[in-house]
Picture 1 (cartoon, rainbow, N blue to C red):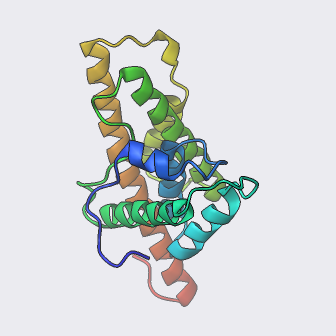
Picture 2: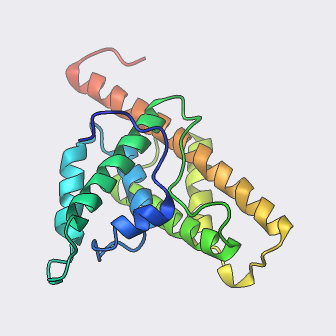
Length: 202
């Protein structure tokens, strides 16, 4: 794994380029949504195993013309994305970010990527942790909001200032929602570990 903490996620276009040869990945946004759900619901999270699994599952081994260094760049990209997101979620959460197109991209491109991110996150979250009774009402509401965002109708969008502002507000809500979900799953796993070991759970 990378040795130094990385403060920000890689540029979205760079990530998409480095992941090009991982042909079974829908998009960089989709991959990051999956990763964040797994960080939330798989504790302790084994990063090396995740990276190797992604490489094995998604690398297009049938393609013989893979450029020299492409596999290495893809693996380094996965490591960097994991390291950044794990570090951000383990902080106070203020710096947590989603791997999405830059703000300068058109609204349709950004919204499509956000929809892919949310779809991957919420489906993986439910797959890994179908029992959600331990979540607070706020967290369950956040999960439902993320699910709704995944189903947003992109055909009715217009590139105007009002909808751009709405996109930014939704993005900020989802960002904070993921932090909340991570905090609650971390607390849940900690309590379960203490209960299994016979420690007092307050």
